[in-house]
Length: 277
Image (cartoon, rainbow, N blue to C red; front, top):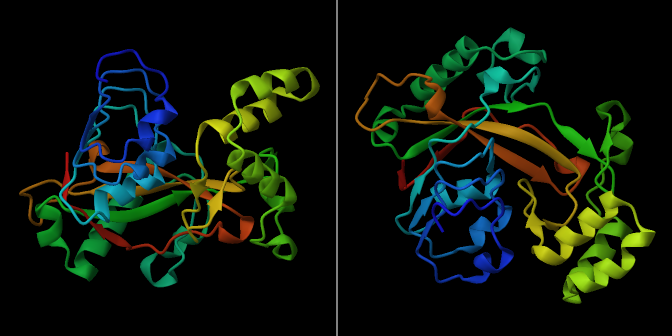
């Protein structure tokens, strides 16, 4: 599929569970579907040369948690860097952060560099990083919250009183629709009666399987919260000389099934991988 000017990957591709090699390099992809992790036997994945600004959280599973060797080629892509964000949130572990980390604001490159060196030193990760098989969580963007139909809602309206992980009736109806295996012709007949935003949700429902919460693992169709996580990837053969280069930081988009699951990850979390490029 390389060099075909693709803007979107067909959903049928992810039902081919026996695929071991997939190259979609040099296309025009702006989004890599979360269902990429359904390619359970993938051994080589090349997504370089596209228009990806972030990576799905599920790609981290392919990079870190598969029992077999898997090579993932990501660069070049215009991935967003953490110091390009206006706001970020503190770590869940107060022992791993400095005093000013408790405030939201712009996260500088120096801040991240200090975090990285602190984690490497405290967890003695030099060997794993120099082998190129280690990812280290560094920071998260501020969390964006959404209503049951996917509309954006201010964080000020998200209170502890509504921190509930029970799926909404709308979410349950979407799952029922997905199980019916409807075609796009059915949606076409509904188009005059529903909003474009709702049509987009229905189209996504019948086109792709449910995603899974980055925190609890429960399935969902409409994400209730989203946030970017930034992970550092070490370079082969540089023991004790790891630097926070732009190409060493990877942004992963995390999605939560409920507001209750929208929590910052613990700084210093480490993910050991097989082979990254």
